[in-house]
Amino acid sequence: MSLTGTAFLTTLIVLSVVAVALPLLLWSRLRGPRVVRVAARMLMLLFAQGTAVALVFTLVNNANNLYDGWSDLLGTASHVQQAADLGPDGTGGIALEQLPRVEQRFTGAGGPAMHAAGGVRVTQLRGRVSGVNAEVYVWLPPQYDEPAYRNHRFPVVEVLPGYPGSAKAWFGALHAHEQLLPLMRSGRIAPFILVAPRTSLLPGVDTGCANVPGTVNADTWLSVDVPKMVKDNFRAEPAPGGWAVAGYSAGAHCALKLAVAHPDRYRAAVSLSGYNDPIGERDSLTARTPALRAANNPLLLLRRATTPPPVSLYLSGQPHDGYEAATAVRRAAAAPTNVHVVHVPRSAGGHTMALWRPQVVPAFRWLSEQLGRHHVAARGATPLAPSTVGSTHAAPASDTAWRADAGRRR
Image 1 (cartoon, rainbow, N blue to C red):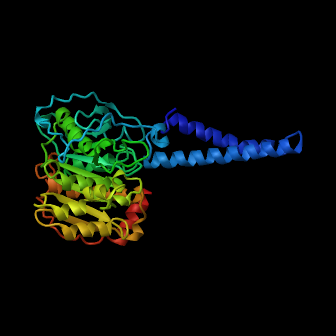
Image 2 (image 1 turned 90 degrees about the vertical axis):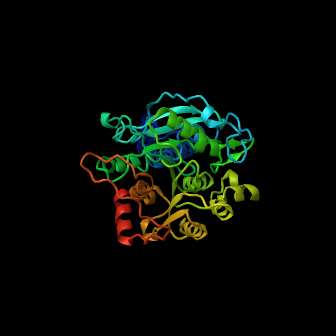
Image 3 (image 1 turned 60 degrees about the vertical axis):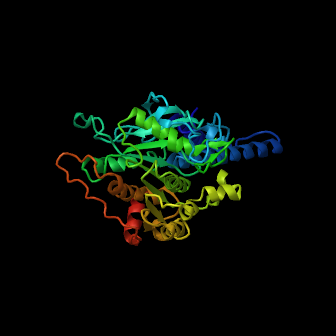
């Protein structure tokens, strides 16, 4: 029985009702020695508490897309088949353009919100370079299947969850595709292909989206294998000009690091409540040694870069939850690196999906300016203007606007 399935949730609801009914019906009717009656009552109370806790956990898990299945929850799943030393560029010297075409079979994804806004599809991808074998979810914009655009290539955004977190989270908990669909149809946001690869690759640990020889090649999985598969199976724009990466929490750290480390693969990144030092996630693989922390800290990568990377960065955060990390990146950046910082007030809520959900549309409007210069607008719609975003600090969001928007989506 699936952890996130309807059958499991229904079973828990039924058991919870039974657990409440049992004491009401049997508490005073129990017979036998006192010790037996006490033991039976204790068992009924434990049963009621256990089912209540399980039901609440399941509802929270389904609402926030934390764990996909039992193996994720119990920390027994590994999606790493091998982790060779692939060198500083994460390719192991392989000429990627000479690799054979990756042809994948996609099916409709199951789960809450997966059938909304045209539907999300999923495939099991075996990364030929990274040695990772995991699922990848793809959502196509409304223009993709229209005959008028059959020769058009579309910009791509890889979307990454936090830790723990399911690759489905951007579609399930954040409803990104449902929020963006009408805006893409009207031409107010560029028609991006959204790609959500699995990031929980090792049991009980956050990979930090890094390559650690002998352990995992998460960076190569995300920045090499997944993009190649997408470009081989869909009409995607070439990298880096048509590619971006976005994430929240631990996924925000990954998005920023991938863009700064690979400006030849990504043109832009969105970081919602991210951090720079990998130690920001206590279960991060890259927080275990000083060398790994330094090698995977995007702030240090920017400071040490011989040539500033030509990437645009959208960084949002609250005080003590991403904002200070964002302003540190802005101070360290030099042209052509473009940094856009958004201050989110405390009144908007805490480190939850309710905070990030209303940020999806503003972030994708910004991405449209960065990558959507040649986007496809709906017939009769006015195309987006060229980007005018500079390397400046964005005006703080209105307390009232953020509070109202977050409140509507809780």
